[in-house]
Length: 252
Image (cartoon, rainbow, N blue to C red; front, top):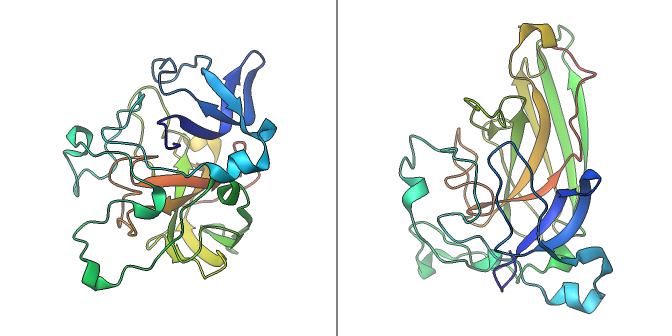
């Protein structure tokens, strides 16, 4: 969000013509539909129509806890933080996000304030290759212009993660799923997963997207993508615009 508590949204936004990929500032009191439904956002500004100086002046912040306007009751780290949805914490600038057990003597790597202008410059490439026996798939990424000197992770989004009944828990794309950017915000990452694209007739939980997460907490979480969910301690920086990977089929 921005420093005024408004949501910064770059992604699918509900509108008169259905869902469209847009970049907008959304009011904090925007209506919240039931999970699985959509309602038009109360849009304050179209980011693409803002002057460059305006975009440069927006310092990105974490969401406060508990996460506001949240209709997704997922517990993301059931072993590590079963009480996550009851915790309270104020919004903080992304570069000053809460770090567990932090001591100033530990030598925290300094990160400049993360502006919306810089955030929008990020880009990446992804190659997917199946093994010869089609039992595994390798995901190979190359990133440019991410937040410099920072911790990132990669998560998978599977078909049933957003199901309205009994959704599956979103998980990492590989373990460990972490990389650290260099001083220019560049990095590479790869992961290899077993049977990530089962045939549709198997009615299993195939990967349909991947999301690159900025970690304001400066850490990764093993088999969980984070403790609190998107905006709290993990922040979606890059993703594919639409459902993907239907051209691939893997086997057990």
